[in-house]
Length: 453
Ligand code: PLP
Image (cartoon, rainbow, N blue to C red):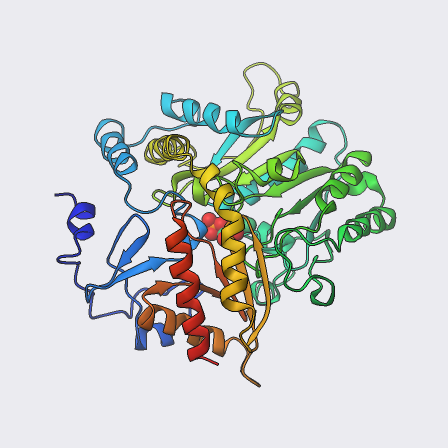
């Protein structure tokens, strides 16, 4: 038995450790967790397992990443086989075949014209990579004055200095000094008065893209390198783009020679019913950042898909035999991550999981609204693809406390994992969910919200 099959039977989960002190947990209330740990010791398909033998419905695909579900046999076997045959090989000045194969495969799923893949190991590194490519691209094209980067309020682009600089989450920025200079932020696209309880993309808000014209007018187009946005802002509460908003951003960036970067770390690989959100919205950026779903969370991997124009700009710029881009990571295109990615993309294709997400979307949105919309503490519900954000009324004077209580209640009393971000509950299950799982998830969330009301 592999551990996965052993645990899948739900028989003897790994025991939990006694000493929780040494691990400084990321983006976590360490003291609260360590006082009452929500420990996970196994997983299979749409469920996690706890040390006390409970089966937990995974309403969040881990951290928005396990799109194919957990411990899927073809992915597990591909990683095992790869680990035993080629554990590591450098991709600086050497190559191994599977990295080229995965890059071609990703490019083949991407919008036309996005043909070249640079590998990193996470979304944060992917974001840094895209920002650096944007700056270097203008430099090699003789426009080195284009150094300004534009992000968006309520944007999340990971935890690197580049990502927190273009990102728009105050708590992620305020401890870390001046950050990158020359960064502006577009307004976020959420307006409850205009958009509350919308299913899918709201009608109101496309005009907010026009703010980019103001920023460009203020600084001069020849100082602006790139605009980076999440097509659907996930981590800051699930904000689907207003209808027409991304098209408008594309028009303005193209008009001024500014690169448009979509951070699709959450939205890629089926989350919105298409390989990339770019395809759902019919808007092709110059670069797409991906991570998470590429390996269904099994092995860390991220990266950037760049347009032929960008890639060729670099290839044409450097002398023969010279390095064209001074950037990379020891583990760019790591063999284990590549094996996991290829097997994962095959699962998505063979099981029609992007299509399943598209098919589920209507039922998913209907279930979210019919179970939750009438509850007193529910202030808004947003849905898009198979993602939902549910805003709940905070307890007076104690922001986030009720959402945290909901996460605890869901885990202990409803046997399900939900994610909370501020006073929003975010659900983003594996694309392998059936309608009955969706129903069970929203029914469970309803009971939880009643319990914390
Ligand atoms: N960009 C977006 C849009 C994300 O949602 C995330 C993670 O949630 C990241 C970047 C950062 O990815 P990672 O945590 O893999 O560095």
